[in-house]
Amino acid sequence: MTTHDALTGRGTATEAPPAGPRRRGPGWTPWLYLAPALVLLGGLLVYPIYQLGLMSLLEYTQAQVSGGEPTTFQGLGNYTMLFTDEQFWQVLLATVVFAAACVVSTLAVGCALAVLLTRVRAVPRLALMLAALGAWATPAVTGSTVWLMLFDPDFGPVNRVLGTGDHSWTYGRFSAFALVLLEVVWCSFPFVMVTVYAGIRAVPSEVLEAASLDGASQWRIWRSVLAPMLRPILVVVTIQSVIWDFKLFTQIYVMTNGGGIAGQNLVLNVYAYQKAFASSQYSLGSAIGVVMLVILMAVTLVYLRLLRRQGEEL
Amino acid sequence: MSLMGGFVRRPWRLAAEVSALLIAAVVAFPLYWMVLNAFKPAGEIESTEPRPWTSEPSLDSFRRVFGQQEFGRYFVNSIVVVCSVVLASALIAFLAATAVTRFRFRFRTTLLIMFLVAQMVPVEALTIPLFFQMRDLGQLNTLGSLILPHIAFSLPFAIWMLRGFVKAVPEALEEAAYIDGASRARFLWQILFPLVLPGLAATSVFSFISAWNDFLFAKSFIISDTSQSTLPMALLVFYKPDEPDWGGVMAASTVMTIPVLIFFVLVQRRLVSGLGGAVKD
Image (tube, rainbow over all chains, first blue to last red; front, side, top):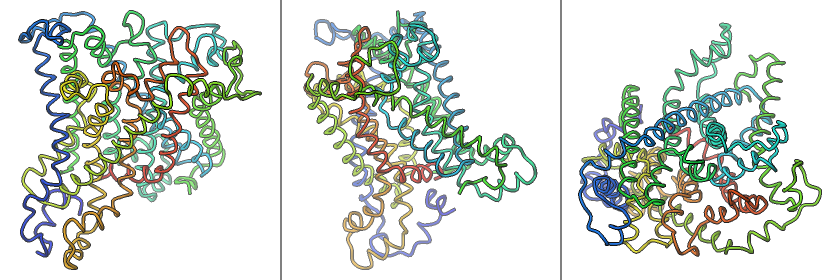
């Protein structure tokens, strides 16, 4: 309750005894404290977004970068080019499907293991926690190379155990995506697990005992008691996962060597990078960036609406 | 200890515990394999019958890694970037979080929403304009081109998360400090800052990881002067898709993973409680 009052400014401001410097009102002090953050965010976040939008409307390639040709205004030309390009739609579809698969798998694994954590004693719980923290801490680049090595056609243990000879997992489109998916789930389920576990522990044990005594199954307890109570937490981890998985770069870039054979494993972020930095079509790359930005901002709007519906006020 | 322990029948709990241990082993296996292969002699790695142990551990791979390509220098570069980012972002976020939680002023709510929205911006999409911005600032090929964006991008989340910690410090304490004649600056640095420090530790995990792991910016902004490279790029020196030097890759990966692991173990407890607080808030 106090949280909400402080947030909305309903309580504290009026109830607090007028003492000390507060009585004179904050004046410029808050802005002074905010200044460094606002300057950095303005210069390195807001301004680049503006630049991104601007560049997507220009003709900007190697010739313009080196000053050989003047920069010309293209209007929506880059977008027309992008939207009529069949590869773009393929990449967009692949990105959406792949991100969705990653989010669903990560959440399923994370939630299942969080529930499992509540049902075991200290030693197995500590073991699972530590292993998960290790996976969480592993940098994306090293995680990618390690999983590549596990699935290496010649020297990897996976082919050996499965008896699949020297099968190359990165050759086929789906198996390459599946391999990246495994790595992504491995390094991102711990966040979900730890957060949901902390949430479950905050649920009063009487509630669970009552459900248990009423003869509810574990699945039923999760579906009818825990999930509704954990809704705010589940919303946060879902949105975070959507955002992380939608803009994946490192794993795809490293594990499929820059987008796979003939670009079969490209996702939007890698596609934009390849367009901009590999083929110097900076304006086209910017247009792809704008598409990404718009999609993720739409997700964010949904998130804000969900938060509001839960009655959370800022 | 265990939440539903009393209500779960024994064989089920045993099954749950066995599966927890098995899953823990599966999750830890990639890391085990990484360390194992970093210590395996070359002959054992390039074997079609990989064994999950080694009879003669060797440091050859580590020697190769540190002997080649100025790896030590990359390591130092990474450390410099991460330390600058973590310290600067913690200080700046602390000030901003204090402003939005302990003062009432116009646009406060607007600012909070903007910080929330800013967290959602896919910063990777900004690589292209940032590249030209860094070029214009003369920062390309310097560590500054990595430090500055990472500080900026870690701020929205850090501010959002620190809010809860700053708010938890009772108002009465602030009033008491002022009544005792403390100035605003004195209250800020000598009373509030030490109390919020645990929250700062939890928050810095995220700036630490994003800066330490960063691959895209390092790849895009450090284009010609490789002496300014950071570890993720160095790692790929050993990883050539056609003929990877797995021993070198795994040794470099091990070196790169250890600092993050140490950091995680140090702040682990605070991370879990801090996250819970930030999420519930």
